Image 1 (cartoon, helix red, strand yellow):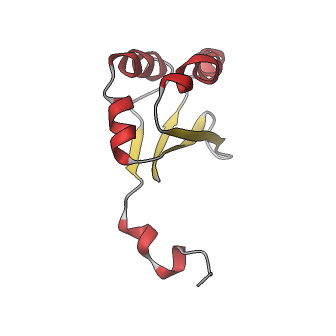
Image 2: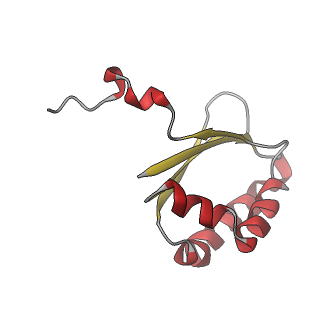
Length: 107
């Protein structure tokens, strides 16, 4: 499995548009994203409009194929217009996940 994290801040006047994009993704976009597992958007308590979105795909290759598609580029540009600035992305293959403190305690 491959995951990535996006952090950003939504413009106050664009929250409804962002929510509409989420519904559009659920209704149409994810059906065309081969290897897509799920995503969730978490709103931060401090600082209005701050969020963290976690996205999971079956593999990094499946994620890249989707992310590099013209359809996803157009969708991303619409999403980006809702944000105050470019979001911060974290690659889910960070070595922090290899830490014994980050592992589920099963043998």
